[in-house]
Length: 283
Image (cartoon, rainbow, N blue to C red; front, side, top):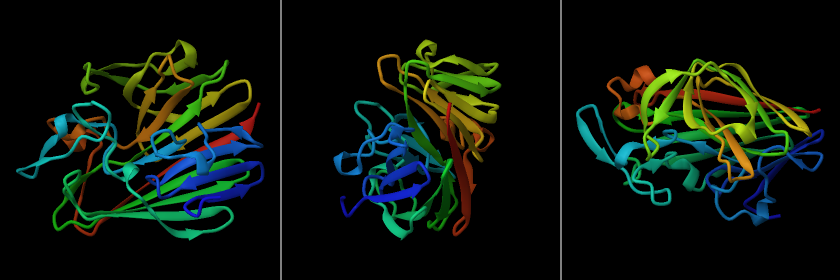
């Protein structure tokens, strides 16, 4: 076991963490069966192929690596393949520190000083609580800058796509996107209920109600969160799909009223919290 890895166990569930790789989850298993896309922690070399990583201080795309906030222009940097945008914030590509660790609970933290990838200082803590039939994740984000900063939070879990993987979510609207992935307009979306193999989404959704239910021939999952938006990504050529609880519409900072689309303005020294819970059972 790598000294940089943590493992939690509760009943049939085993959770492996790699705080040093972007505060990510290397894997989550139930009696040896992957619940999330899972890699033994020693074999993982980056957060992107992990089971789940944190989205801080924004989710998804920040358009063309620039934004204006409180009358000041700011830039960010490339961090995702050949995308013209910055993607998923900064915390998923930085090492986190272990703050506490036990048999079924752990807390890790990341402190950002402000740099060319994100101009504002902040501190974020991520908590993991493992029970025999559930995993709960929590964030506490604190603004360390001397001015209000725009804040978005989320998680990016990857689920194995099995032969009978099926997704059911109650929703109200879907954001259509341009070819680079930026949202363009909102259209009605009366929920998702179908086999993942027949879905073709890479969208942010509004009006998420109740639990997102994921079921296949081996497992039944319920995903709930304090975060009101959901990004669903169902790539047809991959052996995984993503159902991501997030706090805001993708690229909200470029919209006419960012705060109306979920972005938060957090005062100096103030904090915001979020949580996500994944309940796991057999079928």
